[in-house]
Each structure stands twice: as C-alpha cells, then as structure tokens.
Image (cartoon, rainbow, N blue to C red; front, side, top):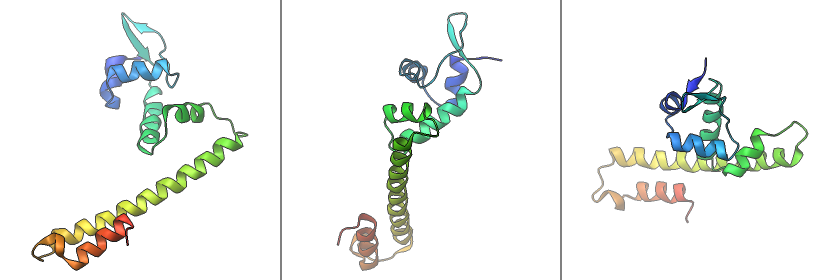
Length: 130
C-alpha cells in the first residue's frame, strides 16, 4: 500500500517540501501519484530515518547520497565513514562532559553559580579549554 506525501510527511516529521527536495536530490523516490499527490512505498520511512540521522551527525546531502548508493567495495567511503565515526565519538564525549557540568549546576548552591570552582572546571572540561 502506497503512502501519499502528506502521510509520509506526518510520519517522518518532515515537511512535504523537504520530501520533494530529497526527491530532486535523488535521496528518495516516489512510486507514482495518488491523484495529484506523490505516493511512496512504506520503506521510504526507513530511508528518511537514515537521512535524518546522517544529517544530525553532520553528513552533507552529497555524502548521504553517496552512502545510499554505496557498494561493499567502496573503500574510500568506508574510510570516510570511519572518520565520521571518530567525529561523532568526540562529539558524544563533549556532550557527556557538558551534561555532567549541567548536572552539577542543577544542585550547586554556590553564589553566583557561574563562579563555582567545580562548575567552572566542568565547563572547561566540556569545552576542552585549559
């Protein structure tokens, strides 16, 4: 059963204009029309989830398109994915440090809060500024 563009937009949380844009870029494809509206196979939702995750991780649309067309023997792409994995890992570590500093700030009674030595140290650690 095909999903019309409105249903795909609703389920994915993306605007219909974003779906049409992704289609123009070759990231997704419609499977015809339901009246005047584009219609998609239900599997497009999985592809949109992948596109959204990749965008959140900092991939460009061109990189995502290349990834979607990748074959197992694409060693250059695999190297790029490993580099991106390291970037994401570093970001996760930074966000973890930031979370920890916010946790401290939520219970700290130092006045003013931003002058708390422990909070300052946690923020320095989160920003990696010495």
